[in-house]
Image (cartoon, rainbow, N blue to C red):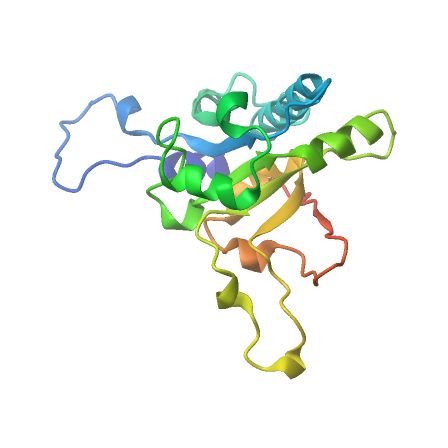
Length: 221
């Protein structure tokens, strides 16, 4: 219960100049948690795979909040935390079809389609991305028993030159502004971004190397 309460407390934002009388309903002062997620792949059967990925994310959030056996299902704090979760879904083929990561960064910054989630919170200016590579992997492996579905997490304000080592002897660049992550890790990512930057979370990689999929198995709460 203590951890759930701390999560809920972190979502409560009352303006500093506002004094609330005792007994005030605080519901309007809670900020939602979650991410904006963009879809840029719209080929044959992509809709089915896109929906499966969204369902995976939502199902894991429910499990994380209510407990794997549903023991917190009736807990009002758990239900409030769950009600505050948002997937801000952006799936407009006319606007997004085929766009690369950098174009989506610009769309986020320009707030095309409305203000995305976390836009005003520097430590959480990241979005989730389902592009052709994600869809193709899901299409090829979704029925494989050991397969863990993954998506991409992208840093909005990434500047490549900030991550080029000043000393060549230290090796090449190892962070590129995004990472692969399992759909089941979305709650853990949201939690960890309150403590670390994505560059500190992402498994290190190098140019041309296959990126490892981040799969955080810790308990969100």
